[in-house]
Length: 261
Ligand code: 3PY
Ligand code: MG
Image 1: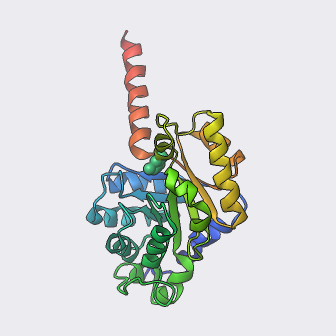
Image 2: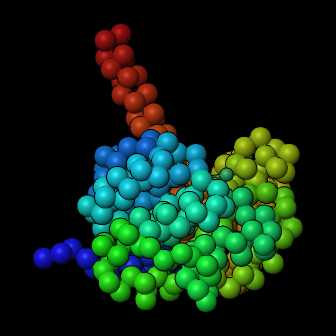
Image 3: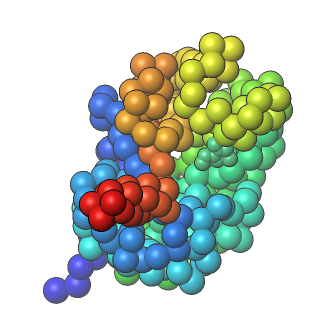
């Protein structure tokens, strides 16, 4: 029996509709086996990072194969607001796109247009792998299933937040706390306590929640996740596979060196 399943397509939408926070991790090593490990570890969503991660379009396909081995939903951060690249990631089977550096309503409109078929956008038809994985219904269901998430990570995006949030086809925003803090004149703050910056982070969540959008943010660890959830975020991307591997490798080496010392 073929393993096509149109219901898989609705999973991301359904996950975001839940009232509990949702967790993911960025895959940055460019390694499909790493994606398989994290996808089978129990996270809701696995996010392939084509912006800062080592993935190319070719290896993103391997990552999608690997994620499919588990129950996790595959999404991708595109390398930039580049319609050709976004369309390929969707054709490969990513069910959501996180787009970096969306600073104006025009940027946001260009982004969501690339994710929706006409008349709701200008995505070109050719779901080569997506129609194999999700079945013949893919075309009919794609516009209502693919999730569009715009990164808010500059001063300019902050000042245009209301206009960005008014874009109908935009399903959510994702705060990049490092880029945003840098643009506001700080070192990269990630989830460090910083009253002035924390106020801005809460303000973004309040505005996005009032519009019924997914409110996503990047954090370093569990403590950071807890804080951002309290500030109003419901989709948390925690760390990345390269960092987790680095941390565990350092711990393992220190443990072994202590043993022999
Ligand atoms: C940022 O913090 O700027 C990010 O893009 C997180 O991934
Ligand atoms: Mg960023």
